[in-house]
Length: 190
Image 1 (tube, rainbow, N blue to C red):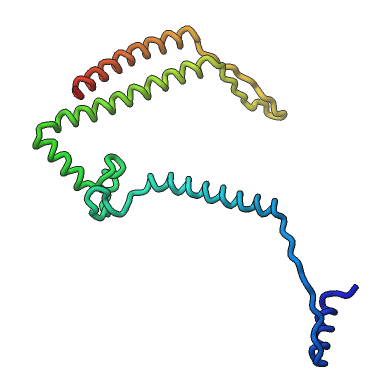
Image 2: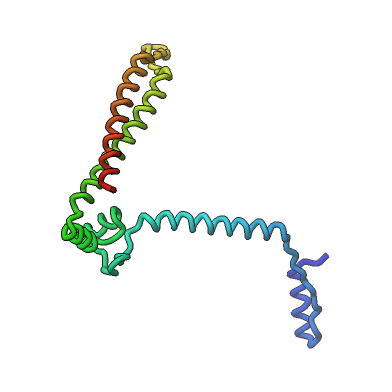
């Protein structure tokens, strides 16, 4: 069996003698299953990249305001876009329009009440999490010993009844405040 180099050499010699070089037919075989897998992997990777870019697209401040098409290059524009999805100038115009119509105080109060409501909901969820975590005992290991290393285990637990009592009192109070804030908010919207 001759090598590829020897075949090339014979073909060159035949061409130099004026003869026709021996022809060879080469067939390339492809594995269709492997091609399908590779194309599916490429498709999935493109989808993952698109999902990431979509998530980042929402976090980016655009160059131009979506409302007035003004260039948003100031730091106040950046802040207002994150809060209201338009530039600082559009926000000033919006608030000025509310002041002229006499609706600014209600709008401002509703923003404050919505922030209070959000804070109260966060406090309620943190108390519920604390209640769950307090029911589990905490184990701590300390390294003791001078010559030989020893581990000392400490188990800490909280008084479950006291935790339950404190959390129910706090939740009742927060729920009362939450209802009051929701009532104020609903009275503003009517």
